[in-house]
Length: 148
View (cartoon, rainbow, N blue to C red):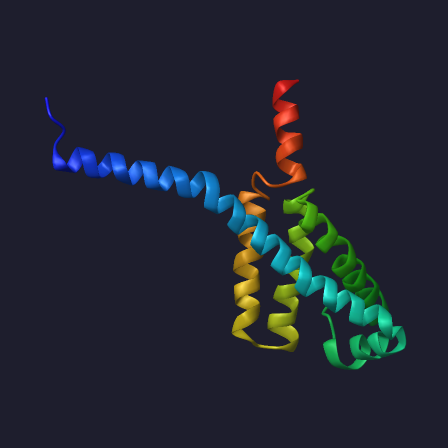
């Protein structure tokens, strides 16, 4: 029996979406990892260039709730320098995105109310829920664990 128009359309649709899932989505995940890593890395670099200014900003301007300003400055700087490296190579991506998401939430609700931070939160949530994708160390380790 000849395939109906609907069956042919469904077949084409499945073919296209499979291609998107297999080839384009991994590139998108890589791109968003690199983009978020760049944002946070640059912020961490600024913080270490003038540590006294960073401490003063955390004491008087940023005011992170429930944390001493000095501890908040150290934690934010450490996360902004370590997590982007992990995101870039795609290692422990979900874990690395968690403190970045927390920082975006704190920035949004205690310091700057910008739509951009909501966008960051969505992207970081995507990485937490979906992971790094096939172009990552996480993917390699996942495949090796399945073999053993």
